Length: 271
Image (cartoon, rainbow, N blue to C red; front, side, top):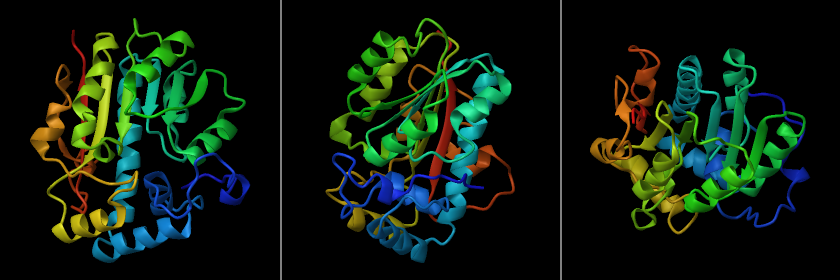
C-alpha cells in the first residue's frame, strides 16, 4: 500500500529545474505504484507503456519487493549503512523503515537528482535522525562519495549496502555505468552488498520501441542491456543465487513473467 503523503506536486512546483513537459522516470514509477506525485506527461507515457504491457504496474511492485528483500538480506548480515542511489519518490516501505525493523540504529542516505524526489525526501526525513537526503547525480560518483565522506554520512571502513534500483538503464554507454559502480566498489569495505535492477533486452520489442520513442533525448531515455552486460556491473562482487534473473524470480518461483523484463541481482564484496 502506498503511504499517505501530504505534499503533492502543487506544493513543490517551484522546485528548481522542474519541467512538467518532460517525462520523469521517478514520476512515472510513482504513478505505476499508485502515487499522486506525477504530471500529465508522466501519465501519458505510462499509459502508452501499459497499453503494450498491462502487467508493468505489477512489475513495479515486484521491483519494490526486490528492494525490500535486498535491504533485509544486508541488514540480516550485519550491514548498518545503506545508500539508496536514485531513490525515487518516497514510497512505503522505505529503505530506512525496512532496515530499522532489523537494526533500529541503521543509517540511510537517499540520493536523487530529481527536484521532486529531493523535496519529498527532505519533508519525509526532517525528523528522522540518521537518515539523510542528498540532491546529487549518479553520473558524478566522485562528488557523491566525497560528500558522503566529508559529511560523515557513511563510514566506508565498515560494510555498506549500495542500492541502485531502476537507475543504471538511464545511464548511457558513453556515461560509463560500469565506471560509476566501480568507483563505489573501490571504496566499499569487504562484506558490503550491491543490489541492482536493470532493464533487459529480453523486453518485448514493442515496449522497447514505445519507451524509446517517448523518452529519447530526455533524462528518462532508456538503455536495455543484456544479462551479461548486467552481470558485468558486479565485477568485484560475488553474485548471490539466483544471480541475474527477472526481479520477480528473487521473490517466488511462481510469479508470472512480464513483457517489460527487469533483471535483479545482489552481490557481496568479499575482499
